[in-house]
Image 1 (tube, rainbow, N blue to C red):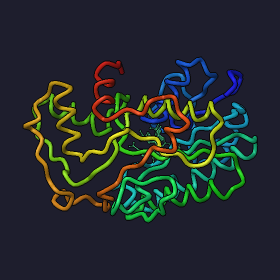
Image 2 (image 1 turned 90 degrees about the horizontal axis):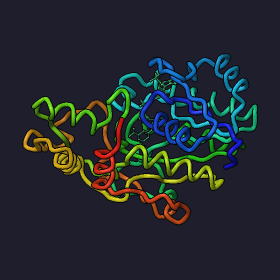
Image 3 (image 1 turned 180 degrees about the horizontal axis):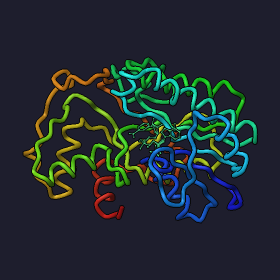
Image 4 (image 1 turned 90 degrees about the vertical axis):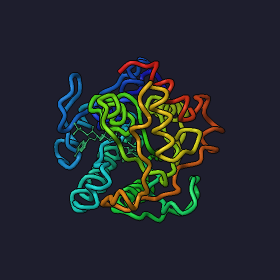
Length: 293
Ligand SMILES: NC(=O)c1ccc[n+]([C@@H]2O[C@H](COP(=O)([O-])OP(=O)(O)OC[C@H]3O[C@@H](n4cnc5c(N)ncnc54)[C@H](OP(=O)(O)O)[C@@H]3O)[C@@H](O)[C@H]2O)c1
């Protein structure tokens, strides 16, 4: 990645886009970021479903790399509003691909382990997707579109991303908020994944871009854990009362969208090319404790 390259982070007001944007600025990369409904200082406004304005912004910024982090990532909302999910997660992504294609930019798309059914995770990049909910299906459609569009692309699959973020809606920020108010919390003990610290993810993504990597890469934390034990570890590290956390099964939680239970991703491919170490969930939580918002 040349220092002269321009980076455009679509969705920089969100958790992952915000982490990529922050990391790019810290590295002195020329970077523009966008918001859509959450006005954010220093960022430009754009809606990826508004083709005209999107194309205008992309042409004006003329980036070499576009990070497509904008999405409708609420899994249960996608299940109850599949048309809206399709409009944002599939059509919006296709608009971004077209915008990138018009100016010859590389697209970096953030995808998920929800492409898989969760029967025998963790999964590597070559495993066959088989989504069990609308969100996973739409992310797969978006991936397929990117991969068949003759565009330069990098697809980064990740999962259970946590860390400081402005809105505070990721699992660990919500957990810290509730436990510090003395509120009880039910957490599934049968959903296994590979939690990923957002700043570690951002650093690894920028390194992949810097190295000119293309294709599909899994970037996640280096250890598997179920949600309940992840929550207990977070409570311990942040000095909160883990007794407020009750383990339940996913069936008991009665979530709108089906969840892949034995999920998570393998990182052998990324480890071969990255010098950024991918952190275990314990080290990621410890790092989060040491980091500032
Ligand atoms: N978080 C995870 O654990 C996780 C795991 C795997 C994959 N992913 C993927 O990673 C990406 C980012 O996730 P996240 O957790 O960072 O989500 P997030 O915090 O909800 O951020 C989503 C971003 O997308 C923007 N956005 C939403 N609709 C838009 C639209 N129509 N036009 C333009 N921007 C729009 C939002 O802007 P405003 O807030 O300003 O509206 C926000 O900046 C998504 O593609 C998601 O599928 C996330």
